[in-house]
Image (cartoon, rainbow, N blue to C red; front, side, top):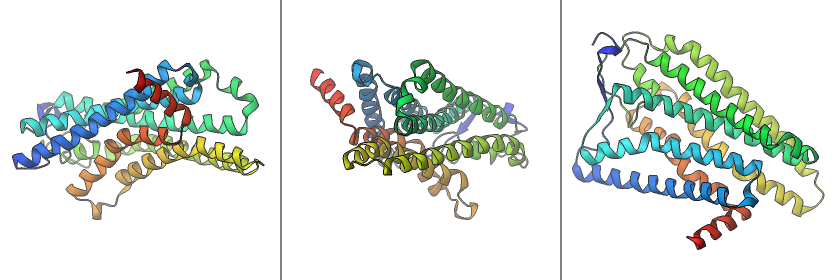
Length: 306
């Protein structure tokens, strides 16, 4: 194969060789996928139906749930189908679409989490200006900016990845198409092709991280000045779920991007990929609903109505 245009398909990683283990993998992924669909779907429906949840915080949470549904639907169904039908193939165009959607949705999630940190900052540190700074038009613009940034970053990476010549076969050592795995099939030092694009993404990621850290430093400073214990408890309850989701996203994503090559192995790469692409969409709804009385009440009413 002289270049990427001669490839018609890629071979994804097979989780197991025996039929029993393949069906076990299918069952596990199906359970996780259905749990993510149900939990995120309930949150989206509850927010749409309950007028008390028509606030900026829940608007961004709804956007995050939509992103989680898209993220897990990009990777898991194809992996389940391959296990169920004992295949490994994904088309060249399908692989490109999968890479684009994964990058688009993960970047959008990071930007949404950054915007949600700003929302918490304004609510706690600038409560008198909350209605002005977080109006419906401002929220729509911030959400559009988050999704637009994800789209541009994904388009840039995908176009760059599939412009490199590939001549090292078509076997991808992962259960979905991933940029580093495609680079391993290149004819030359592919990482030099990615250097410029990676600098742009790194600046974006670092800028969002600094913004989140600075926001929470000011939030905690303001919370500690609240005289009543009940007020401090309420403020922390607003922030802790968001902090937990941010920590889960950053810890898994950072390890996936920066893990040393010396400890890299197919098994470890597989576990890391599951942690950053499959676990968060299923766990995020639980984290957000665990300490949120308004959301739990809305979900309870929705379930009782159903």
